[in-house]
Every structure is written in C-alpha cells, then in structure tokens.
Image (cartoon, rainbow, N blue to C red):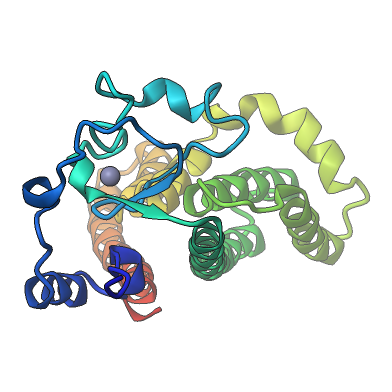
Length: 285
Ligand SMILES: [Zn+2]
C-alpha cells in the first residue's frame, strides 16, 4: 500500500498544506474505483478541508452527529456536514489517529485560551489602575465623597472586566474581592467606618444617574476620549453660571476654555496610549 496520505492537520500553515497537495497530486479515485456503488462501511472520517471528524463507530453517533449527515442510497456519506466539502475530501482514519488529532487540538485550544486570558488580565489591570488614579485624585480634591468613589470604582471595574473577558473563564468573585480591598485601602485613608459592600448596596440603584459614572463609562468602555473632559467642563459651567459679575464671568469663561482644551488633550493622549497598548498586546503575543 502507498504511503498514508497526509491531511491538513499534519501541517502548521495553509501554504505548507497547499504545497503538499501540489507536489503530491491525488490519483482520482473515481477513475479506478469500480466499487463506487459499494455499500458503505462504518468508520471514522476526517474532512481534509475543515478538519471535521465523523465517527460512525461512536456509540452516540446515531443520536447526535448522524442526524446531520446526508447519504446516498448505499449509505455513503455525500459531503462534509460542517463545510460542505465533497465526499472525496473525507479521509478514513483509525481510532488512534482520531485521538491524537483531538489531543493536539485540545492542547492548541488550551494554549490559545491561556494566551487570551493573559492579554485580558493585562488590559484589565491597565484600565483599573488608570481608573483608580483618576478617582483618587477627585477624592483628594473633594470633588467626590468616599461612597461615590467606592461605587463608581466597583461598577466600572466590573464593566472593564466584562469588556475584556467576555468569552473567557474568569473568576469575577476573586476580582471583586481584590477591588474591594483596593477600595478599602482608600476608605481607610479617609477613616470611613462603613465597608464597601454596604456602600454598594445603598448606592447601586442610583448608579445610572451619576454623571461622573457615565462619563467614565464612556471613556473606559466605549473609548470615547473626550467624555471625561466634557463632564468636567459641564461641572465647572454650573459654578460659573451662578456668578454675578459679568466682568469676572468673561475672565472665568476664558479660563474654563483653556483648562478644558488642556484636559481634553491630556485625556486623549492617555486614551490613545491605552488603545495602542491593547493593539500591541494582540500582535506581539
Ligand atoms: Zn469539512
């Protein structure tokens, strides 16, 4: 018997596989196979185009996989049920080969998952550190109170995690614990007796009315580079509108505009750095 024909799974890249197909042309079976009307024999087949495996020897085959397979009157499989490739692409393999292929695929998948998880964790850390810094500055300046700090921080941290770990198996509870610990470090500084969990319970319902939360949400989750600067401007305008003297108002207006442009630029650069880091992580690894 001739050497066993290789399949796509034996090669790392498409181009190696195409080269093999060109240098090892397949002898058309139709020409020589006088038994093409032979009754079908059960076996294990792998599609060379997409790698799908049909295992008729599996005890659940009829109940699960078998239902999607189209056959001719002799019971021969007509095409790959996954990619629709012609029956010529279905190669018979033995049980050992099947197990080996599945093992390799599992390992590859695990490796990819680990890689994705590592990237997600780095992205999460970056954004949470930025967020923590931003909120801590506001707290220090007295622009927000401790309760608001804890709530905005916890809610946004969760959204940041959800954003990066959508299809990944990530333990949110562990993250929640470490986020609460970070909140505690800050609340301790302000000598607040109430714990993070209690603050959250009381504040949770109102989170979507919190303009700071919405602005930070847009910045961190929707990559809107200007939302925070716009929020800060609107807060300052409130204060400005209450001023009586027109002369001071004019001066203040100029100040506001200057400050706004500066802040806009600063936050834009920070956002761009984050986006750039995300892109690089996906390319390099
Ligand atoms: Zn296929």
